Length: 243
Image 1 (cartoon, rainbow, N blue to C red):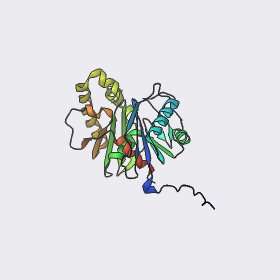
Image 2: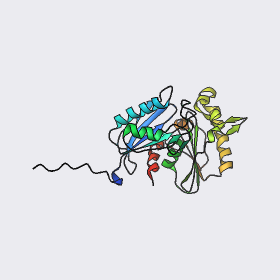
Image 3: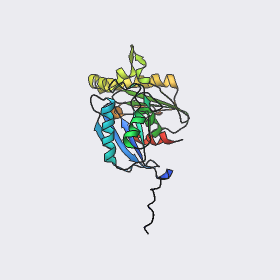
Image 4: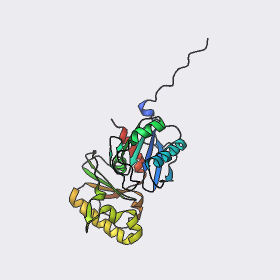
């Protein structure tokens, strides 16, 4: 008599593999992380589809996921406001993201649980110390932001669209398009003014600067301002599963 076939056991918490996805205005990145945050695969990156409609972005993520191998759950950093897995805004993607149930749709496509948060918030989880007031800004296609108080996230902070100078927003004066237009020197001068303003407003203990254009920063920064790796936008995805 042949032995009964046993169903595969569920992975224990310390064995769970998390597929971390970072959706950007120009690129979408992916990597599989161990339960302790160790990368288990090579990070992959593809260009964000244009137009970046929900369907096109979902299809791109599914293809990235296939190439990354096995995983048990998914974390997604999204460039806009997200509430309970539903996207509210996406200023640097296609305009059809309002009210899109990204977490649910991806979960059905990939067959595993999915959690979604703002990309700057996810990056913040990957770099903060967890003490005092910590502000995170991401310099990329747009201007992302995340605020943490003693390690607790203040949700849905969108500094990028707040007026900064002469009626123009942080994103309008420090986004990627204007960097290419005005050049690195002028852009860095604007960044210095932005840092001073943010310090006066938030009285932060630490400011972290990430995003793809953080490498374009050439000015000397205050001691409580740090440039952080863009990889943190993936590594912070584990924090979305802290219950």
